Length: 106
Ligand SMILES: [Zn+2]
Image 1 (cartoon, rainbow, N blue to C red):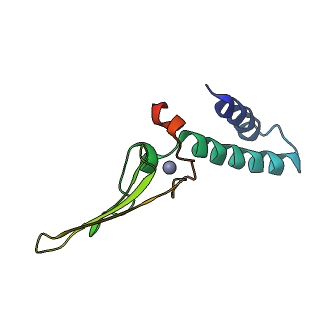
Image 2: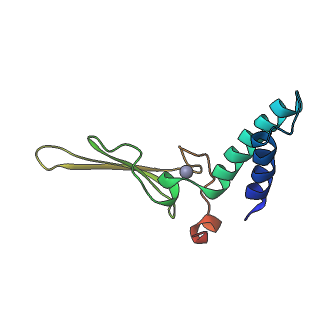
């Protein structure tokens, strides 16, 4: 259990068992949402950690976490493959910073 899971657990307990009075209940819900977003930015999501394509209808738009790269790969009906990439510093979907340190987080 990391620091986020512990704090999220405390707030969830308080909300679920209705032990907070207003306005503390509202503050707790706000803090819970902020903690869940912070956890997501630290842990990452399926798009930046598992290379799930962000778009995949006519090609792939995909994040390569290890190279901090956003790839666009399209294939036409005549088999021409078009690729374009650019360096990115943050995941487009969860906001996690893509860094060399994050390479070995698995
Ligand atoms: Zn992500």
